Length: 272
Image 1: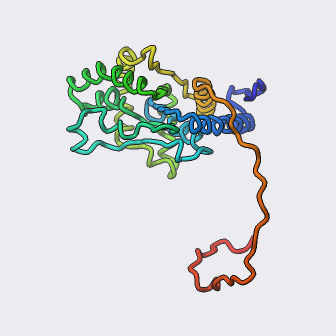
Image 2: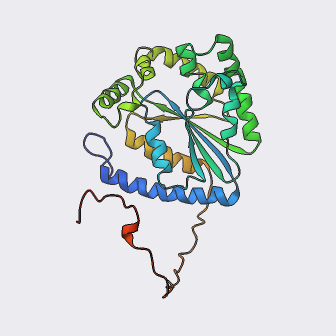
Image 3: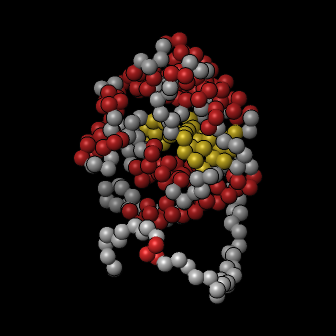
């Protein structure tokens, strides 16, 4: 991985050229990690938590961009159904845990109960405190089953979050990211801070620690997270040697059906 230190502009931001080059290098390493996970039958869970607009989705996208979705998959659960609400709280997450040779990225996870559910009143006080007491035991169980658990918290300032909310309002491709829940979180900044601190107090354990990512600078956050992920799972390069493609064989007697008998997508842009 690159150790080039000439990476800053005058405003302290990463140069786009450096960012793209470094991201490409790190994504190649992620492919190597993927092959190692597959070959060794590892089971990996990575949780991504943080405030709204902290950049979790952007990091997940850059991690998965070059990977095989059969090996590395994203879990982003919606609102629980009435049936799920009646189950043991962790039950809806267990079916999504990885089998051997898989890495699962949770875009928000069981920690919803310690954050949005607590602050917005979607769970009772008894359910909340039961979660905080039970969560370390749940994570201890899955780790002892052979799962590698890595937990990231993306920290964003109030000013940067507001800037990103405003940007979402102006960008039609991002407006879907701004929900009524996001708007409510703006008015409950302190409550979310208290909930996060209490959550860390109970669940930042030696066995399953939280890793905090400074996410005010999106590009730095992406590179730093990927670098850290690569550092906490020891892996080796199992890249196979390049294959030699055999010459194509052609059947002289086969005649393909006429193109006009097939339904083609219209070329709306014409010839180049």
